[in-house]
Amino acid sequence: MDEGKRVSCVVLYLDLVFVLAVAQLAHLIVAEPEMRSVWIALGLFFTLWWTWVGFAVLYNRQSADGIVPRLLFLAGSVPAGVAAVAIAPAAAGDSTVFALSLAATRLVLAAAHAANTRLSDILRLRITRACLTSAALFAVSCVVPEPYRYLLWLVAIGAESGALLAEDREAARRARREHDFSALAASEDPAGRLDPHHFAERFGLFLIILIGEVVVEAGQASVDGHVATVGGWAALVAAMIVAGGLWWLYFDSAVEINLRVLELSGGSPTMARAIFAVGHQLPAFALLITAAGIGLLLEEDPPAIAAKLACFGIAIYLAGTRSFLHLRGRRRATLIRVLVLVATFALWRLEEPLGPHGYMWLLAVWVVGCAAITTRLGSEAEQRAASLLNRRRADA
Image 1 (cartoon, rainbow, N blue to C red):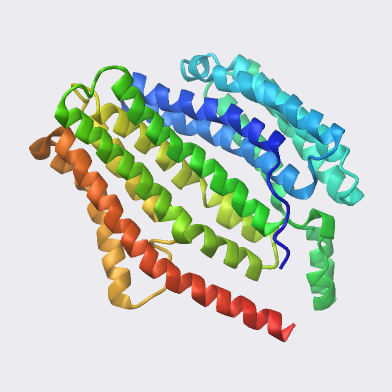
Image 2: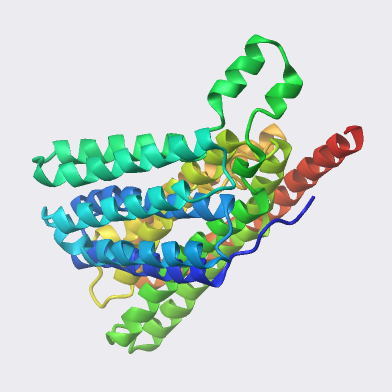
């Protein structure tokens, strides 16, 4: 199979804007370490996540090598950057700038899809209308009181995500009614099909951004002078090991498993939504929680919620990375994985007897152990998926 397009420099530049957004969300939790901050960060992250997904799908369906696509991506980075800076006031209830910035990004996405001549007229019109509708809803939400404005955000994201990632439904229904399976396989515009290799790479890069935030929060503790003791420096080393283990948990096997499953589906947008756009939301936010928890644990007097944030984040990440909990195997192996996941949620109870620094090393050892499990089981699952894919290619 063709390895697909590669990520361009202008797309990486746009990702830098979302690096700022991730840092702002982590700071929001660290500045006010309580569950209310976590829920607020989750809501804001949800809107930013689908903003990023919109640009990921856009580039997946068209190149950014021309002058016009590059200008559109750079134009989109401006309101996205404003939205990132507006996270703090939005968390405090003043979401006008945040909502208007997200509306402006949708206008850029609408213009980009309208100008994308590679897509069929029907697909181009459907996505453009959805983005314009989403932009209007975000703009109108500025004059709508809480909590109804957030309901408008949810409706806006639902409308745009359905258009961005769904297949050509009308053509698919017609093919099914006529029992024309060859037409069903070709019902989607080839230009609108998702490139599985590129899609996997884009989401992998975004997870690297979030894993990098774990490193940033740990390093910030040293900058603030919280790791001046030998124990503090040792805890910082443990935090770096945790970040490396989190990277290994996903990139050693999960990314390949996701890619194989998407290849087996023929690049189906519906499967892509389930695996990447929807399936990665919780593990992505889990990394944000983990980053905040680790940063708080390295402080001189960590708040009580720090231990919970760290272990809950790791547990949610394990549950959502597909390579850990969702692999098929023997019943005993499945039971072991479930027990490990349940135990991960309960690790916070050991923070008090171990102390923050000892607890950090417990997390490091635990994550490394989970990574070892994932490597063994993930390799077997990836081989099964690759074998099935090769058989399908041979039959074709």
